[in-house]
Image (tube, rainbow, N blue to C red; front, side):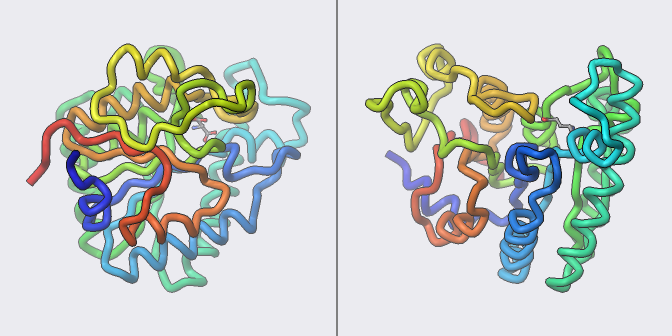
Length: 269
Ligand code: GLU
């Protein structure tokens, strides 16, 4: 078997996706300690010389809470409004936290329509490359205030995979509320076995990827597997890991096993 841990240790351009369940408490309010640990760890990775891109969820939930709405709205225009409020809140906190560790962040909001259009796609790449050259940490989310119906990704797992492949990243890390992939649901089956490495995403892998039990985000394990497939096919290694302790990313860069690795199918230069 290839030494994926060594390859991951050397990854230079890293996209990290963090889900709503990692960023918010059950109350819907932001989990500030978690966000602070994340900002510190990513800042430190940046200090080591890595290029970091963060794909964040949490805008709709943060907006719903801030506006005092009772639940995640079904009405699309209310959800658009909540995203608009929550995105502001998220970036305000990220800007503050990353600044505390000496780093500059920027915001890029994408839609499927934009990433699928050839001209727009080149524009996005130019913006990202320029930001990374200037040592900025770009923070991405879907533009939930405008992205509805057929132009919507709907889950940031796929958005993060598309971003990682556009940027020819070495590694995509999807942080979620479970340690990685198991051969059955560990919350229902105590004999569930952890799968540390997936070399090929085939039907047997899809079959074990039942929905994770997170109530606040939009994606279950299957959306992560679909995203992983897009990334590995364009030469990006993927790790699905638990976001509860973002400092575990240090272990990953020390070449230690963290989460489930999905091996890139082809190798980028
Ligand atoms: N873009 C959505 C938000 O920021 C999250 C989508 C997802 O949960 O993957 O609220």
